[in-house]
Amino acid sequence: MSTDTRPAATETKGAIELTAAMVLSGTLGIFVVESGASPFNVVFFRCVFGAIALALYCLVRGLFKNHGFTPKKVGLAALGGVFIVFNWAFLFESYESTSISVATVVYHTQPFYVVLLGALLFRDKLTRTKFGWLGIAFVGLILVAGVSVSDFQGGGNKEYLTGLGFALLAALFYAFATVITKRVTGVKPHLVALIQVVLGIPLLLPFASFGDMKGMGGDWGWLVGLGLIHTCLMYVLMYSAYQKLPTAKIAVLAFIYPAIAMLCDWAVYGHSVSLLQALGIPLIVGASLGINLGWQFGPRRAPEATAPAAAAPAPAPEPEAVAVAAPEAEKITIGDAR
Image (cartoon, rainbow, N blue to C red; front, side, top):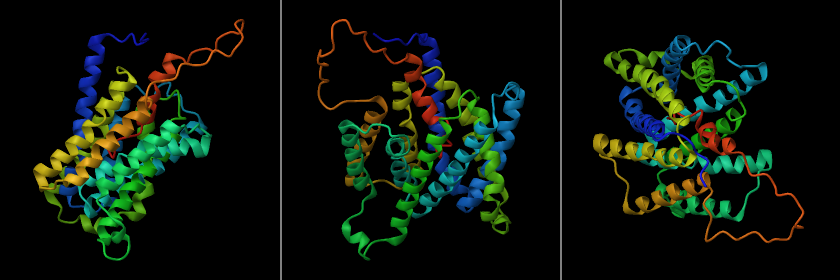
């Protein structure tokens, strides 16, 4: 029996908010490309404008009162911020060498890195089912990437391979940020995001090339949009939606982002994936949902009754723990590159 007691109207509002956030995420690549700025300049000014907008939102909403931060939590949020801002930079680099479509789909291998990092760092159990989903995702990744053995033997497009590497590195950095930021509990996620974008300003300053920004003119609007729309507004919509939706709906609606990104890439730049690459997309999507929702291969086995009759049953997991799992994992997205 479901333990979810959310009113239908609340879930509907949450679904609308998350759908809007994911649609905005899907347009992010256009703002990055149309700005004409280098990836590190884009991320730097995204942090500047995003920090200003988020700080004003937090001030107006009174989130600075009873913030819940401790020195340890600030340190963890900052460490997660290091990974999140470089995750953005590597993803945007990938746009230039591959395409928005390919980079976005490859980037969505993030959940599998989170599983692997959990096993390596926190000794989370890797079941055969999880290995199965990882295997399916890997096959999908190979198909979407559109590479073969010959591409690694000197005959391939080195720039394209480098772009794929940037997308994978961005996904890995996002996974590190997710694992770290999940441990910042009892703090409004808007404040965590604010710390991360504020940190990004001095962190990216050595990599920014301000001389390249001369003569941008109206293209500054794309960078302002990244801060106001794809950082502040999108975060606010996502965090509001996470409080209203069950894990399953969050996991499914999250895939609106890559779908919109691919549609925008095709409509604006004429980029489309090949038939072989298209076959890999449902493999990655299905494997990601399988990991996030705990899908099993085949019917579940009934537990064997080996315990003595008088033994007390093990307590069931708390519904709250399940309900917040997905929001915590998505807390620092994004930008998702966002």
